[in-house]
Structures are given as structure tokens and as C-alpha cells.
Image 1 (tube, helix red, strand yellow):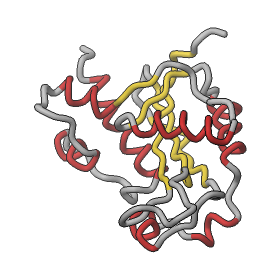
Image 2 (spheres, rainbow, N blue to C red):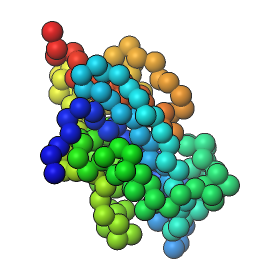
Image 3 (tube, rainbow, N blue to C red):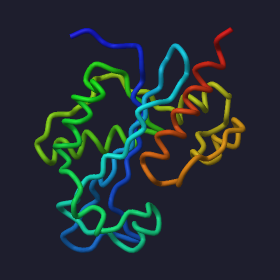
Image 4 (cartoon, rainbow, N blue to C red):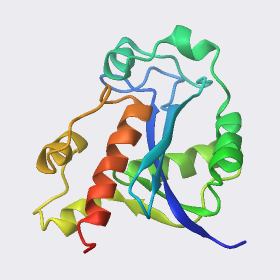
Length: 184
């Protein structure tokens, strides 16, 4: 199966979280897969989508709602993690495209959750760590958070930080700037 190099799938995950350790019997799991496509020829962003996922091994804490704005009520009718992975494959051709995230957490979390739930990993083997790439490209002493990256590049934060769909959109803007800064 040939790779498709026309677009990069930019992903940002949100997961259940707590101020401290999770309550007994609960574990962090993906509750939103934010997706945005970045056209590598034009730098245009498109297909921005939030795949909301119903948690099955945890509840939405007040801290999690405060951080992400997602509530238990919103996620009670959300799709399963398996359905979200199917959408990544069918609508984004994820197994054949390079994908990117801001840091390595999203890649690790997707792999771990797929293994835990016995669901085939939807992405191909090529992953771009935008956080690392930005630090290298701009010769930073250390990797920086998304909000600082947007400031560095004089880009606005669009939408709500810590919402997967909005963060994916903003990460795609950072990636576009890094990729296109080297083009004449």
C-alpha cells in the first residue's frame, strides 16, 4: 500500500484527567480526537473535526471539564473509541498518511489505548513530533508548549486551548509555518 504524501493528518488528543491521581478503578482514556488536515503543497488547513469518544473506564472529573470544557453529559452520547479509529481510517486514510501531533504523548496514548482495547492502530508508521521539530528548526534550548509556540510564530490561538479540534487546528498552523519557512 503506497503512502500518500499530499496531506498531513494533524491530531490532538484530550483524555480524562484529574488534579491528582485517578480515583480507584479509573484510568485516563481518550475522550476527544481533534483532527485537521494540512495540505503540504499549499499549507491550507481543512477537515477540522472533533471525534468525541465516550469513556468506558473513567468519569469526567470537574478538573477535566474545567480544562477541556467537555462534560459527562456531552460524552454520554459520543462514539466509541473503535468508531473513532474507523473514521480516521475511512475519512482520513490515516494508515497511508503521515500524521503529526504536538509532542509524543498523542502517539504514545493512541498506541497504548489501541493495545488496551484490542483495536488495530489506525495510523501508519510515520509520525511528526511538531514540538520537537519546532525546537530544532528555531534552535530553541528546549521544547516549548503550544501557546508559547504560537506566540513565537506570531500566530493567534484560535478556539479553546485544550479542545482537541481547536488545538489540532493551531498545531497545523505551527507545522505549516515550520515546513514553509524553509521553502523559497
